Length: 197
Image 1: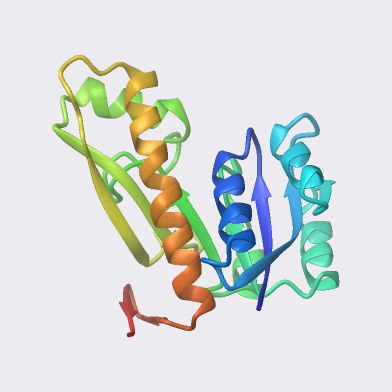
Image 2: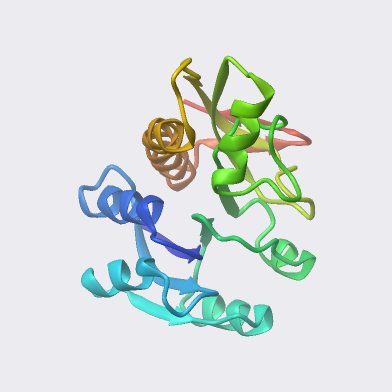
């Protein structure tokens, strides 16, 4: 069973999807610790509701200490609104997974987070958007892509409507990607991630 640590900044709906996946055994893993850089993040409450260690910590050296102390093997960034340092990336190379609410490389990188992503999609007049799960490297949203799924942009979409449909896809492909990682089905070769049967 893979020991998982989750970093969050907000409500933690993706965190909840991961916890549910571990509890219903669709993910062969266990969330050991949830760390937020914001004290009032509701995701911390979600963790406590499932008897998972919940910690508020902004200092990345201390975050690494907490991950090590809990023997974490996989780090999930689930709405973590901070770019992680090269030090953390090096400690957990190809063992940090992020979810982003667009089809990378579109509408991603510096400044594209949360509702700003969906606003960008609508303003640009894109016909499709979606979600991307990727390994984290030193850049912003630049690591090797594990999974993507598209979502149609409808003519009457506003940010809230679009975000809701994208979030459903996020939950689906994030839990699937984590499950494949835990089953040792992912191989990274350069920029490409191969899924092994």
